[in-house]
Image 1 (cartoon, rainbow, N blue to C red):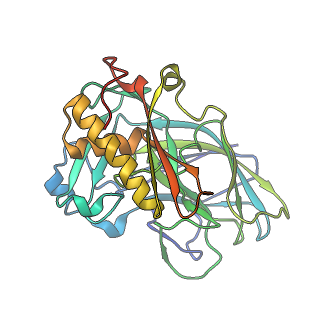
Image 2 (cartoon, rainbow, N blue to C red):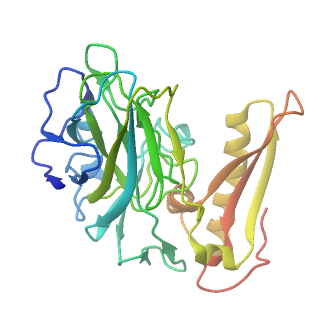
Length: 317
């Protein structure tokens, strides 16, 4: 059976006491209509000044909870990700004090993306392919009380794993009767690292098939991900790889991303803010080595295929 849950009543906390808005049977399919992560506060016409006044207590907006018939603590939900449908727009921001470079920017910055079916041309000189996923998919926590949604955990939640797109299957341990499945924080695209603080935050409808494994031991979220981990078009050209090592892994990330930002500023004549926004939605951070203590090496991958004018050997500093 197929079910649809609307977004007229979202939740912005984890709370095992929330009553389910819908009950489904194992094996049913489920479409969740989701607001953007701001709970509908951001609009395509919003200015950065207006964005700075957002009610941050409403972030994130989750659709649910959904109860799965027969789910009990010790069981596992099996969530097969079938489809995403965006609504033609998304947003990405910079917020002072947050993200990888939060201390370097003193004003809020907001970029609105105009989305085509499978791509966006919202920054001059680049074409970005969309690869939608939910930043948050989770079940209600074992602990009683209300909890903000920013921190992920064994229950899933705000994991921001962009590989959980169409074709992936996510397994989550169950902690309360019915499980209390919720999802939201949909992104039309995101780089591994989400370095500005956001991906492409978008209102969206996600469709899942929800199965149940009884008495199945699982210590935390686990996924079988679609083997196409990058948009296929990006694999047709080389990647620019910015490599940095530091005793503090976060500082290595800052150095690698900082070089990518400077590269984009020079190649596309972008502002530092817009270059960082672009990194947040397309640049992938990877841990290259941890063995050469005390140094960690981080590599930042930027696909050449996004650029509309080829200049493979454009100077990277």
